[in-house]
Amino acid sequence: MRAIQLAGARQLELRELAEPPAPGPGEVLVEVLAVGICGSDLHMYETGEIGGLKSEEPFTLGHEFSARIVTTTEGAVDGTGRDLEPGQRVAVDPHVACGHCEQCREGNPNLCPHHYFFGVAPTHGALCERMVVPAANCFLLPDSMSNAGGALLEPMGVALHSVNYSRLRPGDTVAVVGCGSIGILITRLALLGGAARVLAFDRLPWRVELARKWGAEAHTVKGDEAVGIVGDLTRSRGVDVAVEAASADESVGQCVDMARYGGRVSLVGISAANTFSMNPAVARRKGLTLRLIRRMKHTYPRCIRLASGQQPKVPLDELVTHVYPLERAAEAIDAAFEYREGLIKAVVALSRDRD
Image 1: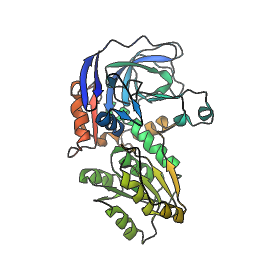
Image 2: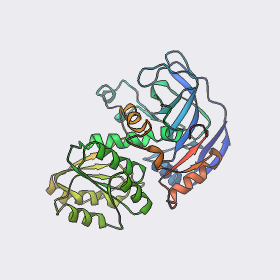
Image 3: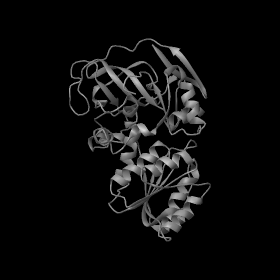
Image 4: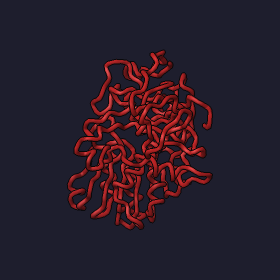
């Protein structure tokens, strides 16, 4: 089968690989349909690693994906307990927790220290034609949802978990720094969750345009202009919740400056340098609560309900601006890495059915 593999920093190759093994109990063989290109893919593309995790061998990227069931096994039920059958389309949660450790038992599988994650070394990802995945990580897609939309349930899950973990309350004011796909999704979900006002900021005007279409008061900014805008629009009070979704070092400090006294700051973005800076005196004086977002948990069923139907509350397909076939996946990653004009989300489509 064909796969796109990272052979080293900025080295992507289309390769022929052996077919995956037969699925074991509780597993399914799937045909990959669509794969979204994520910021963490770009980190690995640029440096060959992320968070200190690096593969010494050619590695298959991709963790946002939808698929079609090819082969099932005994006990193959999806994440909601429904039987899986060949031909069904599913979204796949790429995070596989152990299910037995303290964090898993307490309901926090996203914090499991014994997990593996498709698309992060050493576990190969979805930029390939077929793969074996746990049945319990699959979630059936409704007919109204496209293959690309199914792939984007993963970043939507991160956004939903971010809103949940930020302890958003009806009537809160929110600032979102960074309007990539996750940042835009956070703005939409915050409004659906009852935020009275969402201020969104990015340096790319086409991202700002979509955030504005989805209900945010969105602004194109440079440098630290966002801090001054928040001060002006809130009469120097600041916002209840400031969300960093830009993966940039300086944006963390900006969120600290934007938050009101007693406010909350949520860090969603992953800095390529694995560092960030802020003024601790400001954070301490304001008595801020800082929350660091670790992936997601228990989000797929809720995301599917919000993103499906003829008039979805979260129209995921509107995020998809660039689509490439598997053999051009390197172009998809290059386009995202270069912040190509007009690009919000690049998707690699392995099947045109329902795209």
